[in-house]
Length: 414
Image 1 (cartoon, rainbow, N blue to C red):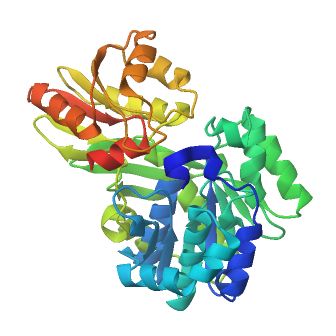
Image 2 (cartoon, helix red, strand yellow; image 1 turned 180 degrees about the vertical axis):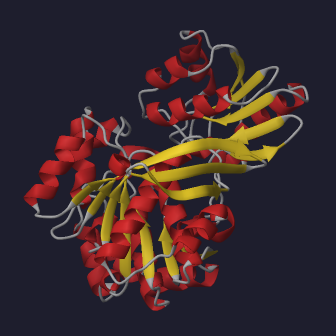
Image 3 (cartoon, rainbow, N blue to C red; image 1 turned 30 degrees about the vertical axis):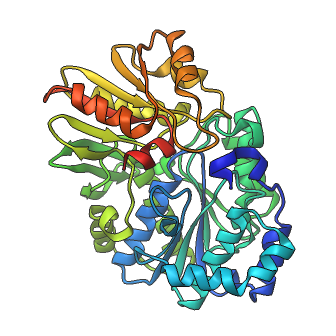
């Protein structure tokens, strides 16, 4: 399982998924879909799209990874997780096939999701890529539209050491005749995406070319903003319950994707659904861990941002919050280059170093030692919960406790 052991669990090949799904009767061809890749923001973007599609009245499947608390979070219809009984019956029915094909944990889960969506006859499913794109198990679908949020350095041991190489892997979801929307225009990745779209003869759209965000603020637990299209106000006074200051980028991506979807397919979205869906993403889809407030007095916030670009956005959010003292509960995994992330972290904080309870977790003493090279001071703790409780105990009412560094640290904190 990739979340536990890392790269050794990643199968760079679609064969297993193809064989598995063929035996199941190719369920991936029995429903419409939207395919979403990207380094950061693909989870938020997937959930926002699903929320708006639900608000429009569509029966909407949502496949995402990793999960935070419950495996079943990965497979949802209209926000409702797959039942325990259905997980069991899928495994039982396909046990022989699983032993024969020997799929990875992720490959088996993707097949389970596709069968679930086909069985329950969803109108459309939002399918989030697990890793990369080209060789990701989800890449056997023929979606209505493909979306790539952005590119930054992450999983370099598997996807490549440069932004261009990583963009090449993500561009693997761009398919013949299926329009693709790119969320963020980036100098390193733009030519890669344009070349791939040209090679497969499909239209490419850059969301941030025409759509711009204005009047961004966070008040009373809601993100507020307006969106203009070529200087014409298109969406005044939008509100979202996802309050991270990085979310406007994702909202722009979502709106462009929906615009292209409405133009190119029979799936039509009205503005009212956009307003309703964005306002209650968490309620409609069950999304957690995105700049999420866990408690007040002291204010405790967690976020799953874990690579250079993700941590940069987290720090921007921290800087917008008034506090007396900053406490950071921090853990990472050991198969990534953590030096860049550590170099970005605030130096004026008290750190509570911890290890997520998985094989890939980085030893807290080692993390503390590495962090000290970047003048990040703190103590090492035996578990996420001990670190979290210590931080809350030491924090005064006007302090800020931030929990992050790894998705798995956030999962345990929740």
